[in-house]
Length: 193
Image (cartoon, rainbow, N blue to C red; front, top):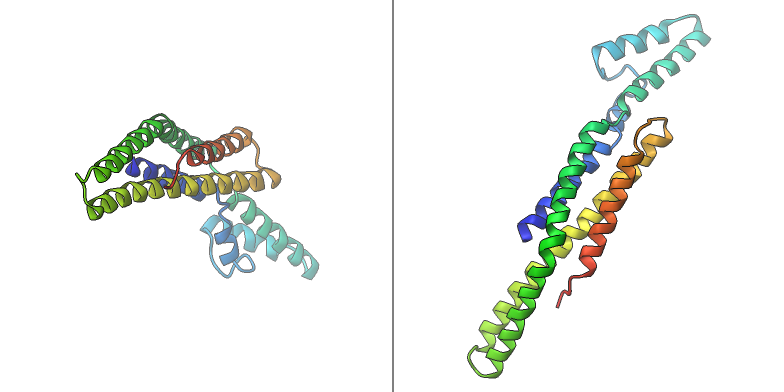
């Protein structure tokens, strides 16, 4: 169960990476030409900047920067869809298996309490078993909290791309929001002891 939750968190982190506007490259390309983003884009930027006199050069440079920024800020919806679907599958697996896992742990804790009360288990063994269950629950809860945070960040990134003119992201935004709600709901069902 712990590995499933960690896998879910890792997949949700991938969604954040895929939805982050590739603005790091924009920040590195100070002035659209100091750092070559790609040969074609750099040529277009230089050509636009060289067009005309001083005023034309400024306008061309700004147009070149805009073009580089526009091309770099596009999110690949198909890659995000694939990752969201895999993440949703993992979330569904956790949602179906988590209640049974928690119930089994609660039963084990009840047995431990009874064994300690009847002297079948000493305090050290009891504490070790109890700590093991608590640690597993904490790990699962942490992975679900991370997943929720990643899904919220992905939705925010997608909304930012949409506000900058990228279309076709509504389903992706909704799916990211749903994933955040599901992770939060699953987390709320875990008692950390």
